[in-house]
Length: 352
Image (cartoon, rainbow, N blue to C red; front, side):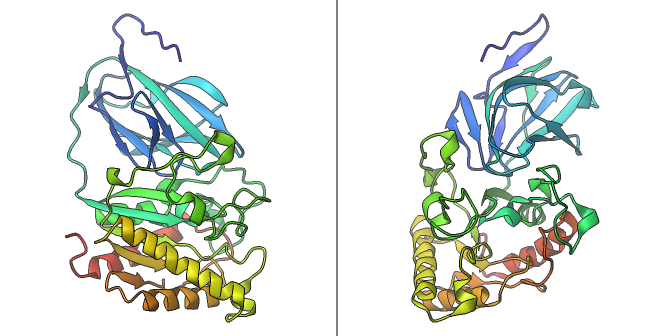
């Protein structure tokens, strides 16, 4: 992408050491690829000029970039393809703290090409020492979380991505309460097994095929593996078991069927795969307050007990499975985040 600077401007390339990246990010140092919600780049800059050069890989919904400047949040509507965004009007001081983040899941992806600023970038404070990773679906991604007018109600029709904001997800809210760095491996419609859930229908892809990838979405190219040595969490939250009822609600219809036993075996296998990657992490298995049959939570509890691992836990929210028929709004997610954070803090030696 061609980026031209004017006099008294400077180009900050994506591999500049003064930038801080957070989340499971792919691509190269020269062109980072953002696909997961909550992935971000942060900087502290002098001056009141900021242009962002990026490419938006559009798939569906309207796509918006999350921007936080000096604590104030904004949502910038994106076009498809390469573009340069002028965010200078958002800078409110001579020194500005700026965070650009992915509000949505793989309805789009971003390739970052650089920034144009006036002055130098300043050093950022140290990263949080605590680390948390979340595997989940649209609830973990914060989909429709800004629709506060529809708390405990179905989603507004035709929202088209307008109200999705990962910053308000319970995952990121809990991470902030815990002062922890977050990797949010969350995608709308995700279930455990291929052929189930709602992600990439009608050829549904499950977490079993996506959990270890950066790019996992076929429209954006071949799958790319994630290097697990780049991030080792203290806590892993597995929030899967809500979309798994599609196309057949196997656990509710017949808990002891062959299909139900197979799901439980594969869930246990997934926990084993996580344990191989993270030998000392605490793994918290849960669902959310989104309406679903309690048989799925029973199945998860059975798998946790069968693991016989003191660092694998089953956690239920106060309104687990009965809090709302629609996506979780930001205020509802805040209650979930507080409960989850309190549970995590209660785990012995959790941050060791």
